[in-house]
Structure formats: C-alpha cells, structure tokens
Amino acid sequence: MNQIIKAQCLVLLILSVLNAVVSWAYLDYEAPCSPSDTENVCDPSKFLKCIDNTCLCNGTMVWDVKNVERCGLKLGQVCPIYPSFRGPFCYGTAVCKESDGHLQQGICTCVSPDEPSPNGEYCIHLAHNVGEYCTQHYVTCSTTDRLICSGTQCTCESGWLVNGTVCMAGFNSTCKVGSELPIETCRSNNLLKCNPETERCECSRGTDHIWHENTKICLTKAGATCEHDDFHHYECIEKASCRTGPNGLGRICTCNKYHHPSPDGTECVQDPVERILAPGELCDPENLVEVCNYAKDNVCSCPNKNFTCSCDCEKPFLINSKGECPAGFEAPCENLPNSPINLTCNEEAYLKCHQIGENSTCGCDSPLSQFYDRVLKTCQLRVGQECDPSPDKISCPETSICRKTDGDITRCWCEHSYKPSEDERRCYYTYSATQLPHGAACQEWNYLEFCPKSWNLFCVNGTCQCPEVAAEAVTDHIRGDIDIVG
Ligand SMILES: *[C@@H]1O[C@H](CO)[C@@H](O)[C@H](O)[C@H]1NC(C)=O
Ligand SMILES: *[C@@H]1O[C@H](CO)[C@@H](O)[C@H](O)[C@H]1NC(C)=O
Ligand SMILES: *[C@@H]1O[C@H](CO)[C@@H](O)[C@H](O)[C@H]1NC(C)=O
Ligand SMILES: *[C@@H]1O[C@H](CO)[C@@H](O)[C@H](O)[C@H]1NC(C)=O
Ligand SMILES: *[C@@H]1O[C@H](CO)[C@@H](O)[C@H](O)[C@H]1NC(C)=O
Ligand SMILES: *[C@@H]1O[C@H](CO)[C@@H](O)[C@H](O)[C@H]1NC(C)=O
Ligand SMILES: *[C@@H]1O[C@H](CO)[C@@H](O)[C@H](O)[C@H]1NC(C)=O
Image (cartoon, rainbow, N blue to C red; front, side, top):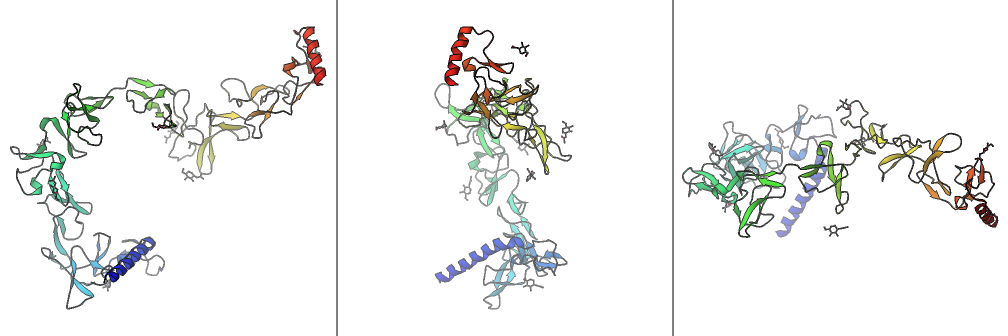
C-alpha cells in the first residue's frame, strides 16, 4: 500500500514538473487561438478548448480561479474520482461525490451548508474564513465576520486585523469586553485592549501609546518609559529606541541621533541641516545634519566600505568643478531625438557624446588622438599629438610635456631618455637613448639623441655646447669626461 502511494506521488511529481516545463508553450485562458494551429494550442492541463478562436472552457465547465486557474466542472457534471490528481475538478466549493456505486467517477455536488444556485450550475457559498477564494460565481465573503473580497480572496475589512483565518478588532474598532467573538475582541498581539466605556479598541498603555497604522501596532511615544532594550523589538515610535534614561534609572523611548521629539512625543523629527558639504569634502552617510549637496545630485560616496567617504556624483556621473553631476565616461548621453535620457557629457573631462549603434555614450574625441585616464577621470592626448599648453585645454599624459618640436608645432612629447609606450599613453625610460658629445649636431626635442645635461651640455643653435655662462675651467673638466666616454 505504502509503495502504491509512493508511486502515485512520484507520478504526480513527474507530471507537475513536466507541466511546469511544458505548459508555458501552451496558450492561456482567453488567448486567441486557431483550431487549425497544431503548434500553439490551448493549455490542455487547464482543460481549455479553442472555441470561437479563443481559449475557453467548454459548455460543461467554467473558468475557476481556485488554487490553480483552470476550467472547473459545473454542478451535476460527471467528475473523475480516480486518479484524483488528474481532473478536471468541480468548480468552486463543489466536491466530487461518488454516485451509483461508481468507483472511478462521481458527480459534482454541493456540501451543506452550501446549496445549488438557482440555475443549478454552482454552489452558493458564504466564506467565513480569511483566504477563501471569492471571485467565483455565487461565493461571497461573510460581512458579519468582517470579511471583504480583496483581489481573489476574502480578507478582513478595514479596521479589523487578520488572526489566522479570522478577523479581530483593530484600533478604534468596536469591541465588547469579555466577548467570545473574535470580531468583538481587540487583537492583544497588536497591544490593543477594549475600552469598556467607549467599546472601542485602544492602545493598552493609554496616552504613552500611539497607534501606528503602517505596522498596525501600538508604539510607545518619545519620552515615555519602555521595557525592552532590544534593537529588534520595535516598541518605540519610528526613529526612536528604548534607551536607559538620563538618571540611569529605567528606560525611555529616545529619538535617535539627529532627531528630536515633536512636542506631543508622537514622532521623532529630523534635525535641520546645518551645513552642506562641498564636492570632495569628507562625509558620513549616517550624519543627517552635515550633508552632501543633494540638490546637485551629490551623494556621500564610500568607494571601499571601510575607507573614508566623500561627496561625489554617483556612477556613471562625473563631478565637475561646479559640483554638478554631468554624464561620465561610457555613461549614456543625449543625442537621440526620442531618448528617455537627457544627459550632457562632462565637458571639463573633455567627454563628448558619441552615437554607437542605437545608443549614445560619452567618450573622448577620436580614440586615435585621445584616451580616457580612469585615475585622473579625464580625457588626455596621446603622446605625439598636437597640444596647447593653456591650462583650460586638454592636457598631455603626466609622464610627457607639451613642447615645441620640429618647426613651430607643440606636441605631447617625452623627455630625454624616455620614449612613448606602444599605446602612446605614457613615456617610459629607455636605455637605448644616445648621449651626444660636445660639438655634435643636435635637436633639442629629440628624446633618443640629446646633449646630456648631466655633463652640462646643451643643444644651442643645433650643436651640443656648454652654456655661455659656464667658465672655461668647467668646460675643460667636462671635456675630459666626454673624451673618456667618447
Ligand atoms: C468538455 O471537456 C471535458 C474535458 O476536456 C470533456 O470531458 C467533456 O466531454 C466536454 N464537454 C463537451 C460538452 O464538449
Ligand atoms: C474612532 O472612530 C470614530 C468613529 O468612526 C471617530 O469619530 C474617531 O475620530 C476615531 N478616533 C480615532 C482616534 O481615530
Ligand atoms: C489568534 O488566534 C489564536 C488561535 O488561532 C489564539 O490562540 C490567539 O489568542 C489569537 N490572537 C489574539 C491576539 O487574540
Ligand atoms: C573593515 O572593517 C571591518 C569591521 O569594521 C574589519 O573587521 C575589517 O578588518 C576592515 N577591513 C579593512 C580592509 O580595513
Ligand atoms: C534635454 O536638454 C535640453 C537642453 O538642456 C532641453 O532643451 C530639453 O528640453 C531636454 N529634454 C528633455 C526631454 O528633458
Ligand atoms: C543599448 O542600450 C540598451 C540598454 O542600456 C542595451 O540593452 C542595448 O544592448 C544597447 N544596444 C547597443 C547596440 O549597444
Ligand atoms: C646662432 O647662430 C647664429 C648664426 O648662425 C648666430 O648669429 C647666433 O649668435 C648664434 N647664437 C648662439 C647663442 O650661439
């Protein structure tokens, strides 16, 4: 016997798994369908049929929202008793009752106190419990039990609180002291009690307590005594905690840091902002009175959790000198006529909006002449590119200088003994540079062949020479050095 049950469970499991895998390929209730379409068919596990080019239940059935949405058999229809998991099932609260000694099939029947509806197709059902389905034909939620139909299920009407399957009186709802009925009993778990004079539920601690509608519980006001010095025990009003009082005796609901109690103690009000921090200034995300400039979209950014935080723009925005947050490198930007995003690239970082395919993103000018430096957060010229040394113009990489080279053109150029890296993003030291001797022809900008300053030689008028100011003695001394090396 046990084996059979196990086997049945296994079959059920396999079927439900198969169903879950396969059913999304089927058409759902009320989906358009075609009887000639063999690939897109109405979901057979929901007993749907293609009727008038729509997936519907056939005449003996009706769409049922109970548990799993599917077609349910009307009252009086033949229903399968075995195998019990296969269905179709009786609609609503009707049950499949054995008839005429049939072991495998029965008839959909109403169970008392339910009665058949006037048209004989459904059971009239009055739902007394929270969670019962209520969108079926002839099902109503019991109003005397303070139930209403919300969505597809019965729930407690406003002012009453769910307790298991029943409704209990909530704040300011009518109650009777000593009543056995849940609807007349204040829900004590929410710290409510029945006032015998007004016959309404009120907070159990009188004026020290205030009803909090969102969490549906009575909370202790700021300044009133409390019991539980427990972070997770929400006893005090929002933004307050139960702390040891100033005299060290007893505990009092005290507003949290950067908050002060309202005159009646019913809420903790945030202290006014005392200072708006400048971009780049250190900040503390917990500090509510010294804050970053939220009006300019600045946030208190802590790139590494433990490290210090500072006022910055959120990624992918990039702060500018005015403290504003325009779009940063690779951020989406304006450019498209119907784009939902309207952003300007950070011009101070020399970012421009480029359209790539359907999207626009901020990037540097031509990738051949510029690149984005992620540390300095700006576009830079590549080594060898023409440059303008003015401070408001795009600069050369840090390892290079903007200088006159051949002719009158200024370029990002390497210093003597350094040469451009392959990607032209920096200059690096090279041992292969040639140090020219005194009197040799030179070009001041040639980083691979130059007059070595360490020997006090300078490229003057195209020749490696000693500086005019240099004394003859020094020249002799240096010439001696050159002879040794040369
Ligand atoms: C309706 O569908 C059920 C299950 O698919 C089937 O057993 C029944 O015979 C159908 N009834 C009619 C009237 O087509
Ligand atoms: C309680 O309900 C009554 C009647 O609906 C209303 O007049 C009264 O203002 C309510 N009291 C509170 C504290 O909400
Ligand atoms: C909620 O219902 C349970 C029984 O299901 C009962 O023991 C309990 O007292 C009820 N809660 C309140 C707050 O009355
Ligand atoms: C970060 O802070 C936590 C606790 O504050 C500490 O245990 C951890 O060692 C810190 N890590 C670093 C890298 O400082
Ligand atoms: C986008 O920005 C431009 C210039 O700032 C402005 O004229 C335009 O109205 C903005 N469009 C949207 C949709 O916000
Ligand atoms: C454009 O942006 C959207 C949303 O960010 C993204 O899903 C899509 O792949 C992008 N298309 C291209 C061509 O980059
Ligand atoms: C450079 O050469 C020119 C002519 O060849 C000469 O007039 C000038 O004085 C020289 N300058 C220096 C600094 O030697």
